[in-house]
Structures are given as structure tokens and as C-alpha cells.
Length: 60
Image 1 (spheres, rainbow, N blue to C red):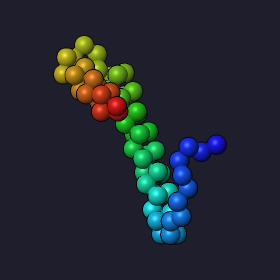
Image 2: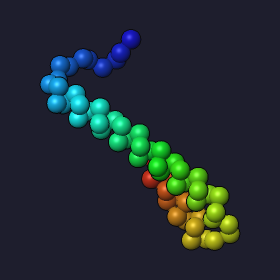
Image 3: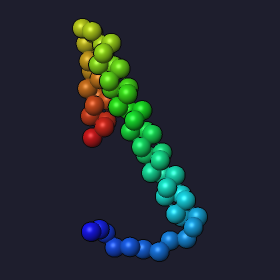
């Protein structure tokens, strides 16, 4: 069951929407990998901890 109404779009718009979704997933995967890598290498550096928290909040 879908809660959103279905709209008809042209083929070009459908392709653009699929590409936008793929780009969104790639950017989320990239951001998550950066957050994970920063967490593993930050050590006790206060600047790296701040950058790590900034990236975590950027995910929201």
C-alpha cells in the first residue's frame, strides 16, 4: 500500500528521478564511509572529534 498519490511523468523525468535516487544513495554511502573512517582514525585529536561530530550531524 502506497501512501503517496501516483502521478504520470514523462520518460525523461522518470530517468532523471532514477538517476537522482542513485546519486542520493551513492552520496549517503560515501558520507557513512567517511564517518566510519574518521571514527577509526581520530584518536585523541580534539579537531578530528569535532570534524567527526560535524559529519554525523550533516547526515541528519
